[in-house]
Length: 228
Image (cartoon, rainbow, N blue to C red; front, side, top):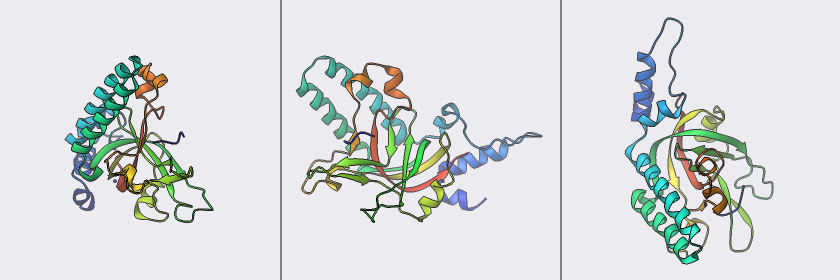
């Protein structure tokens, strides 16, 4: 990883899960029960408006950034990146997102014996249909140290839930994008901590959009549950 940047209980827990549960209960065959989405074609229709708008912004940004990169004008590239951050700041009040439908890419356990605050925590990467990934990552701070961001606390409710997930599963997640000011003291602008798309990745739509970690936003998970 580069350094830069989920029946009564379910109905109360999440309106998206309630809808998925109703679908699961109404699609009963003689020998098979439909248990939630198993493809983006099934899952995308349950995504909230905020998530749809996020992916719309992402798709536009990819096109604009590719054009700016092609110009070989660093100022244009930086302005394109800043515009995207300002758009996200307007869409995500305080970085908060709710009931997004995501696909699990990986779940790992942090091994950091020198940092007891994160050692043993869960590190999860989740993907949206537009290719952007959210979850846990590392960031290089001003003193040159690589620090973990957005880990899931060991033995927390969220930790127990992610322990049940496998790569390829769909999940419902709520949380908060982490800003650079969470890592850099005195940082004033609301820039979200992420690993940006590279120029090489931008050259190919296949690598720019699907399961290659082309863009990862550090996002603190506050609620997560399997959707299937």
